[in-house]
Amino acid sequence: MRRIVELILIAGGTMVSICSGQPLMDQVNFESGQLGGGLHIIGVSVFSGYSTSAYPQAGYIFPGSAAGLGGDENYGATFSVGWQNHGQNGELSVLYSGTYAGQVRYSNLNAYNQTLSLGASHKLGQKWTFSLNAVGSDMTLAQYLYQPSPLNVITQVPATFDDLAAAVGAGQYTNTQVAALLTGSPILQAPGRSLLLANRVLSYTGSAGLSYQASPRLQVHLDGSVSAGQSLLSNQDEENLTPGTYLMPRTLGANAQMGVSYLLDPLTQVGFDVTESRTLNHFEDIYGTTATVSLGRKIAQRWFLNVHGGGTYDVVEQQTIGTPIGRQVVGGASLGFRTLSNTFLASYDRTGADGYGVAVGTITTASGSWSWRLPGSKWGLSASFGDQQTRNAGFVSLSGWEGSGGVNFAINPHASVTAQYVYMNNAGTYLGTYGSMAIQSVRLSLAWAPQTLQR
Image (cartoon, rainbow, N blue to C red; front, side, top):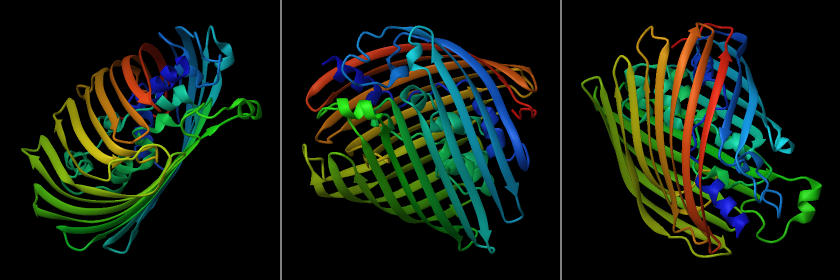
């Protein structure tokens, strides 16, 4: 039972938004082109903190290895390097980040984590644009969870009001590089990915898209993506495995989408999309078809919103435990607000499958993010909230929510200090066994960037 409780904790806590010590703005500056072309040291940081449970830092799920772990102080260091090439018709960027994370009491859980991402876009003539994004990460479960959520990224991107509105489907992008930053897989957090449980987790995702600007108002797009993950186990760990010891040794989610969007006027956009998907994991092999319509609207150059809805139909090729819901209504809404110093985004989404192939069912996600910084001010504030539910999957039912807040102070144009707090509460049932757990965590980080930070 204790092992299942610990599994549920990790499975429910997918919306954790604590960063790994390095301010998100450093990488945003790089990926949005603020640092120019060539090879750059993006940033270096050190951090220290405390968590009321050391288990998320472990990632071990074998008998006796994680039982009884209490709170612990943690520390670490992060560095990022990147290379970019800017051309008249496109951009190419490569970013590598490494983090060493350690613990005071449980030093045997110290580990090195790393992520490599690639982003590219290229104009094919006057009307065609091709984009490519890919990311791979090898890290402990703790660091896997401590990644920024999508809304956290968007609220801090140095983009125009129109580009932020386009990120939620309320207009078209004015800059292809910003579009790649806001839609690329390297900065997006996929719901449910923390079900890929083990001492270490390898995840990888890639997406490619082709868009055609038929007219200033009409755009047609074709996109495809593959997201997968697997546990990384040592030979000794594999020998100790027993049936039901861990959740998902390997998962795969793939989809192909075709859609069209049309600007009714400069402030209003409508769209229609059809998506074919496949979910493949230890328990199921399912194909799905989803069709949605959407409406986006910009209001008074401060507000923007999007609503979308439709239906999904699944064909079960194989499922060993339970039966997922086959047909259901899907949809959601996003709302954003931006002033000179504030950016706020909130969203709700109901889908029929997890993008990483974890489960087919009713997946609902509600989240919000807010950031504040006066122009020229050294102080910045941020807060976020996330709630995630997985239902009707047949073998697993999960719920988890988190709330976090942070304060950032710019010591000078190259250095900053960030203090963060997060609270998580998670509960759920896996293969008929219920468990729940709550965690509080604080972290203080000092970061340095050789290039001037663009706030």
